[in-house]
Image (tube, rainbow, N blue to C red; front, side, top):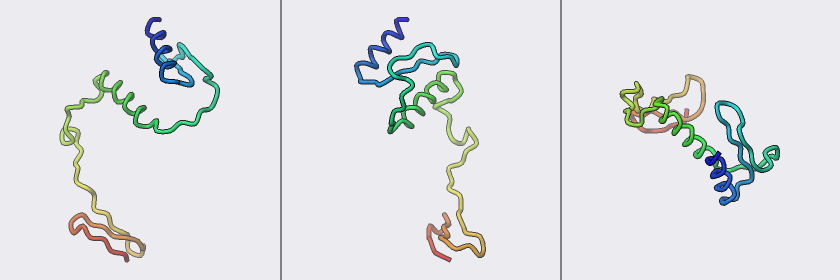
Length: 100
């Protein structure tokens, strides 16, 4: 419970509107008006960072792995238009762009 008390104290100190703590898929604590809709901005980076951190801790992601060891090449694909389609044609070989 000490950890939840620290979480509440921290949430108050940064002006958090509400907080929900989930453990093993169950809500174990909440604070504030959790049923009220809030307008959120710039959440994606923080959420992905937390999820990646969890995956690293569970050894599901190896931060030292190279793209090659994961079977990923970093060569951009060659993009072209189909015959009869209009739009830009871009090739990585020439790095030129034209319109058909």
